[in-house]
Length: 89
Image (cartoon, rainbow, N blue to C red; front, top):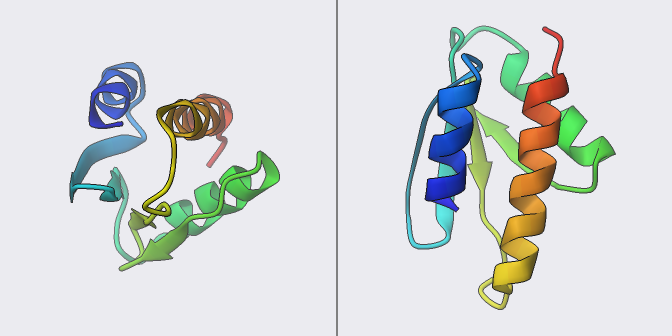
């Protein structure tokens, strides 16, 4: 997951950092804590089939189930990538 997200960071200025431990990860958006960018990006994720929760204004929390398969992780990465690339602030 983090490898795919690092590749996305290199393609998009919207994502500043991806951090986490195990399956619990956070995407730090390159915007202020007061912005609604993370919230709006989560709405975009949702439209594309992925649920995520914004926290602290510019951070998106991801907490997949422990039984997620590698194929499903790649599907989630595809949704995140598609959403970020097509996102309009």
